[in-house]
Image (tube, rainbow, N blue to C red):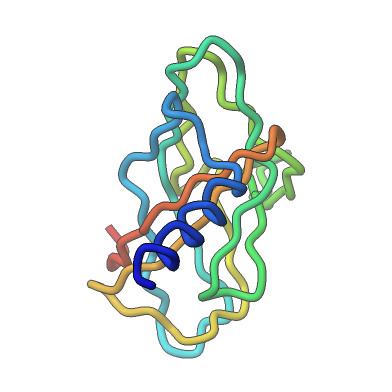
Length: 141
């Protein structure tokens, strides 16, 4: 019986697209927010050692109602955030999501994470591949 359940589980998992070995994430972290904060931000570096560009189109987490791709920019001396539909990770390159640049905006957390917690993130690419990562919650650096 255990073998049948294991076989069924493995078969079910094989139907899910998974991220290619060329994609790696480093230093994924979420900034701990003060009590009452309704918005958190996450940062990470996505490395693409493959021969083709990758396009990040969505990020999901059970800890948040939704996650948005954003970019901070200053226009005419005024700082603002711009929603991004996608982030291209160039072939043989990387993209760093960091404070003051591209980042993940995460409104309405299910529960406010504290420093030392981990937040699960699923990166979804335009080709259907997915990559699961754990982001450490840190105090403001």
